[in-house]
Image (tube, rainbow, N blue to C red; front, side, top):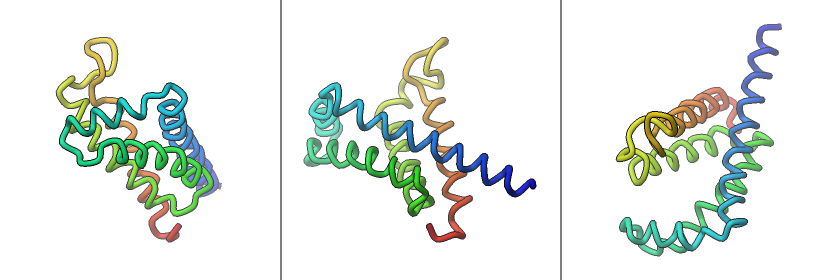
Length: 129
């Protein structure tokens, strides 16, 4: 019974995380901000920022779907954690801790997501998927 509860909790967490990342990428396309993201990446020193922006955006969409269905969940979750660490370095760290309230655009949400993705990666590592 306890194992079923743990499995259900991890499944719920995995699907919610997948949905969050899917929406993040899909919104970037829907709002037409992939080019802006590419410009930001280029200005931050990334070569071919436009292409990197599209690769990250498509990874968020495709990776979100793959994570939701559990296909190589540990790898996808680990890659999302790395993406979020890069986001902290490039954007959020200089804004401080808080996302809202006592600050804006800080690291707290990213830290929560990273911990959640690492939980999913660890829980799915032994399964090989």
